[in-house]
Length: 78
Image (cartoon, rainbow, N blue to C red; front, side):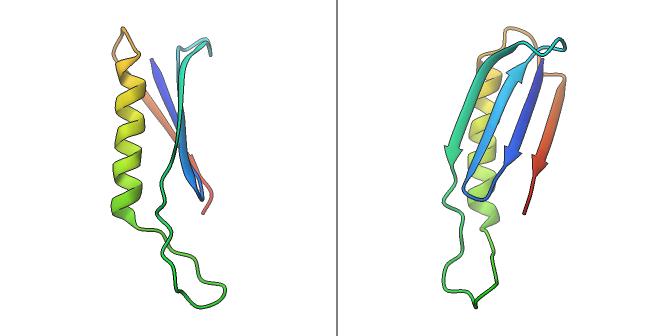
């Protein structure tokens, strides 16, 4: 099984699929990792919050799989 994860500006989303592309589960969680109070034009996120939500999305997707997860695909635009 394949877990595909997108780390976005406001949320982390993922799907669980097989090698043929059949999606058997999907999850999306807001991460609230923004660091406020920065100078104009600056944008930062808290790694601890991203990590916590990332791990929960992976765990939830893996729990839907009857077979082991063999691949993880990660994407993000930051």
